Amino acid sequence: MQFEYNQDKNTKLIAERKIGFEEVIEAFNQGKILKISPHYNQKKYPNQKVFYVELKGEIYVVPFLQKDAKTIFLKTIFPSRKARKILLQKSL
Image (tube, rainbow, N blue to C red; front, side):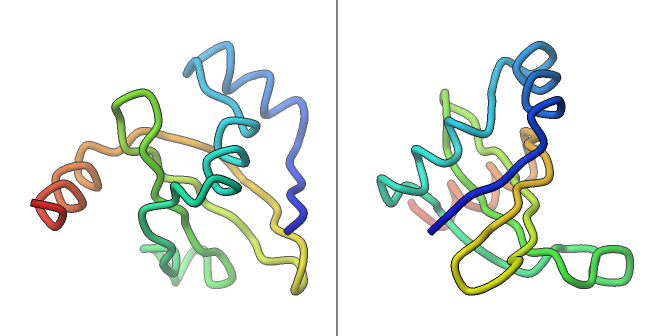
């Protein structure tokens, strides 16, 4: 799988949220993605899906576009308390 992302966005994420796309890609390659699902707001983002990944003790949501069979474009990364509660309850 090949990943693409906006380098300026990555720099901003690292500065503001202390996490970057490289960490998500590494988690993906190590099989650490907890869940992949359609974007929860399909009206606004009909072509997007989201990764749920646990990094640094937090559950992060990573919206992405599947550009083709081999390429994923990562949009952003943000922590989600709601996703953490849901996903951690399912694992108990």
